[in-house]
Image 1 (cartoon, one colour):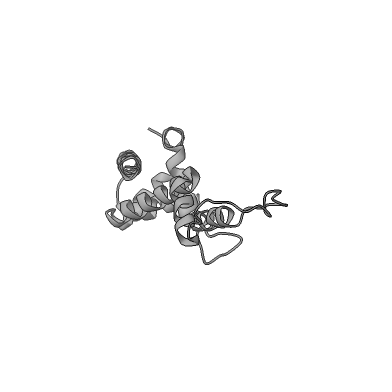
Image 2 (cartoon, rainbow, N blue to C red):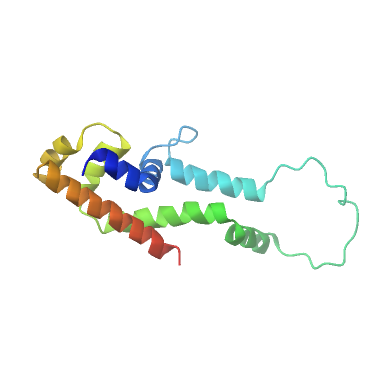
Length: 151
């Protein structure tokens, strides 16, 4: 097993981890994933509309309250569901993970600060092969957590 094999097999998981850990350029208080959720909600609630040609007509439809309409829009938007599901899955997986393994993942895959062997020796006191096995299992567990979170 090597780093390239992990990044090919778990490319999506690594991408979402990067979005979870890295700060947003627009609002550094939020992570990139939190900012994506915030911006998607803004797009849903304040869509760009030039002019509605039916704005002057009266209708006999019942007017739904604004809060209910927003809630319905959030529940129906698939992109927002994906963002929120990844956020919840990563949060849940990080809470149940060893902090040393999380440090290895952050240094190797998120910040790309060091390689697997050095990070494994620094945080886990294991060699290259054992560190790859631990990372493989950790990323696989994250993938399973995301799958279970979708339900």
